Image (cartoon, rainbow, N blue to C red; front, side, top):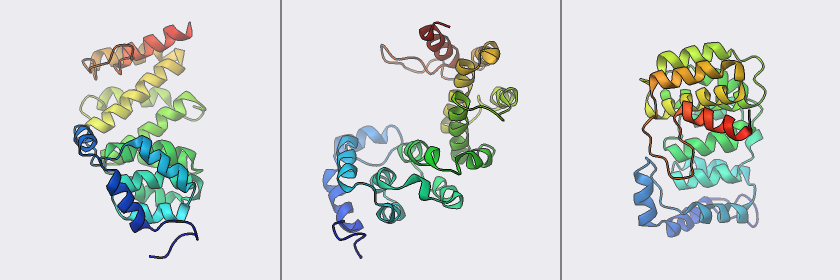
Length: 227
């Protein structure tokens, strides 16, 4: 395979390097969360830092389908260079939770087509794609929420979140909490919806961390802000 630049490794060389970084213990832990790679993320980021931005190399890594290679691709790509159609195809290939999360947060959010895709994905019949739409909506809720119909979003959460698949449910719950945190006029309703649905109420939370249960999450963040 041709090198991307004079000093750039080939995709095959990078896959060999990633394979050497694979740790069975990390792979075992990741498998519990639905991920299928065993590369320490600190080591992965160090590799990305060495490579710097190489968009064509990132494309080639993504095409290989390997999760570690795709995570590396997301770190060295140029987010704004993808077309909307490319990102739409990629979101349907993300597969594992970590690749999906990095794809949305490191690439789509930085792309000029982000809001167009948000509106397209949120109602997609594929729950993984829809979860990306809800994650992008939660991001919009905390910033420029102009044009968002917040009551309608709450209606959808109220009727669909309890039975939604896990990844979609998590994204909808995040959006519910962010509406309650960022928009005081909708706070009481957001807390009420969370209380009645009980989604993530019993989710195990480490000491010092905020529960993802929306009523607790909203109340704690608002308390810290002194509102």
